[in-house]
Image (cartoon, rainbow, N blue to C red):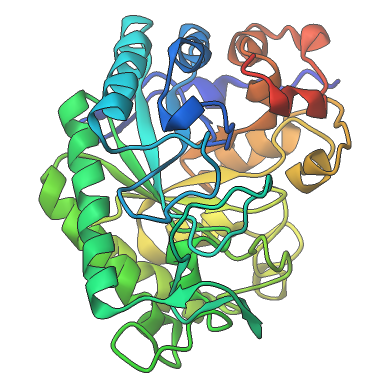
Length: 372
């Protein structure tokens, strides 16, 4: 592998109360390894290892808010209830003891089906009773359901701050509940939470952010994960022009999002090549340009194949970081989230920083079933 200098990855970053030693974020990755939704010692050790390795900011796997059908597997962790919150308190204590910084990713799955056939025992909540265009699943949320869901997000974020977490992230991507409100294919509502425009369909997310901001105060950093693609449709695009992207994202930053975590399958792909060419800004780059907010990019960092192949059992080999370094050196985005490479190798950050490219590990999909 070509030995490009990675110094840009190890510059400090500061935002409000958050101070990071470097620009590397551990991406949130669903592990389904918390029996009955309670984080245990294996989960504590898993996150502590990444803190010990020097990951700048650790984002937890998706952890769900207090709604009857907010998760689709019994081993997805809860972020409510005394037992689960005690488990998360042990996680953040261990991460801080190792010198790390961390935030939970707060999640509601919407109508996403269970990969293992588990049922939450309550109707799946959706904007309009659709999982994808013309694909009925779940029930349309009432005004009361929406209000209670907004409150549940706010309580979870307040608990995150109370427990000592450094940030909180809202999961608004990948075809889950918040994203289903964004998408015209799943949001057919005719009330104030629907509408013909992306700006109108962003009202639910904006109200969640505003409620969360009120609950945590002005100085606690809030992250929002967003994506164009959906698990229901990898080619889906909410915003097909920079103007549409501004209509979508600017109100969310105004509502309280400090950082936009812009998920794409391959971070090096330009978002609007018809505007700025094949080497143009990626999703995070455009989001930063349009909103002025800090952004996190993510997508197949350090590996040859994307995560979709990984879920299909395909391995990925180690590749160079030249494209990442170049984009970060030109200030395209502020932070880079690394998923499968860090999942497979808790020592990834140390190896990259020391230039130990030879011992970087290829990704084996078997790692998805372990807490390495």
